[in-house]
Length: 201
Image (cartoon, rainbow, N blue to C red; front, side, top):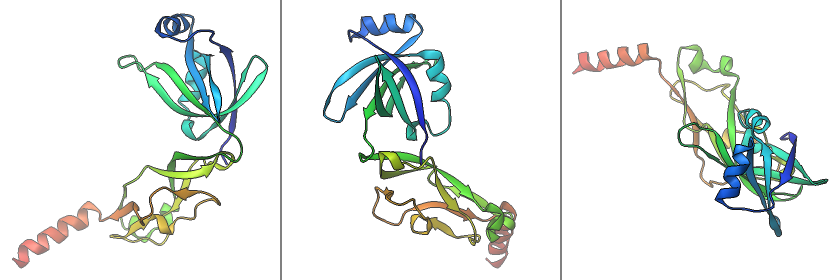
């Protein structure tokens, strides 16, 4: 299950570009909390502290407890806007969630047991088709990553979503049995095969 990170925030009394610019000059980042049939709440966060959290792995799968004026809001980050040149975060959107809120989220893939893949042992290459998988899950059960085992796969094999054991209640948004990765032949074998085809012709 995803971890919950505590964040302290301040209320922004007014929205708008001018107020947002002043917020950034003060070393803070404008943000908004919305959803769950409640009015949007405009807030600001400490930019330096938030930036450290932003660059941690799995940021968009982490839940946050944002405390504003003594009230705590359980939220999930949905969007971050960045400056086109400096890449500094300019604005954050948070979605209010409760424990049973079902949401759609992109979850990173983690490949394990590569030492138990016959194809990789031969020098084959793990060709990753999907670095992330879009799934639906309840807010309290969002996986930090989806574990995909390479065990038993040989050169030429494809690893499909049907071979992955997902956590209970987590479902891919795509119905078909899509490919997550393939085991490609090592370059040496490809060269030998090409030479053989040339000789045969």
